[in-house]
Amino acid sequence: MASLEHQTFLVTGASRGIGKALSLRLAEEGATVVLVARASEALNETTKAVQNTSPNSYAVACDIGDFNAVAQAAESVLERSPAVHGLVHNAGDIHPIKPLMEANLEEWTRSMMVNLVGVQAFTQHLKSALMGGHRVRVTTISSGAALRPLPSWSAYCTAKAGLDMWTRCLAAEGASHQLSAVSIAPGIVDTGMQVAIRSANEEDFPLRQNFVGYKEDGQLADPDEVAAKLFPLVTEQTMNDSGQRFDVRDL
Ligand code: NAP
Image (cartoon, rainbow, N blue to C red; front, side):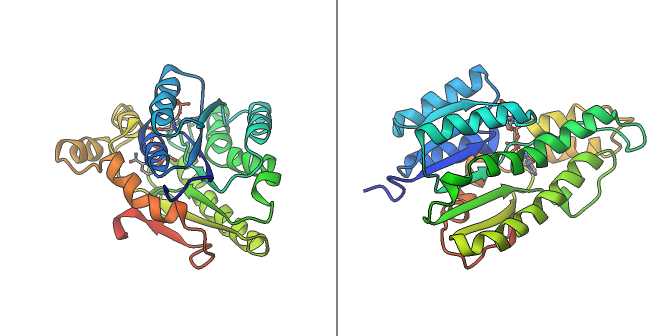
């Protein structure tokens, strides 16, 4: 029997990149995967690929930066999956890449919504599926940017730093409900997010050439390899490491 049979894992940002690789890996191990991202052909295709190995898996299209959309998405998850065993808050957006003093406030706020507030909203709406007395692991995908200020990444750095603390708060409050939580920085990974970083305006982002160099020098990690390293922590359900932050490069 596959190890995750009868377990449901919800992965946000499942259409592409790290979330796609992790969803496929979870499906291979027998989990039912709920794939969350905005409606797109990429989400449809990834869902079909996941369903090839895990036929009960399904997609829920949702913009995580939109409160109403998150509430509706959570409602449809609860209808189909009254118990969720693993929740992976992986969706993320690097924009806006702009100096703090010049960033458009709506774009800055939107980053907070997608990278941080949406995580709180989704989790809260899924309360009954997470606090049913069964063991649950919540994983947030953090970043080195949570620890290190990078020029023109103020929204992303601030949101990811907040996400680390949010994870610790959830771990503290979840302990009496068998709910554990960890945050994991995935390293520098060859995904659409790195394309977005390399596409930034050089004037806005003086480190752009460094990121071009990481790609040219083959320093970007493969999403499948990163998913394989995330897998044990994402599926761990003991409370031992709850509240901790990990970096994939140390695993
Ligand atoms: P990616 O390939 O750009 O994927 C990002 C995912 O997030 C996509 O599935 C995207 O789905 C989803 N997403 C973005 N905005 C969303 C929204 N408003 N609502 C719903 N879904 C949304 O990037 P990735 O590298 O795999 O990123 C995964 C996680 O790793 C992120 O949290 C990122 O911050 C973190 N991370 C990545 C790196 C790296 O080097 N790649 C480094 C450190 C941390 P749609 O666009 O299809 O909706």
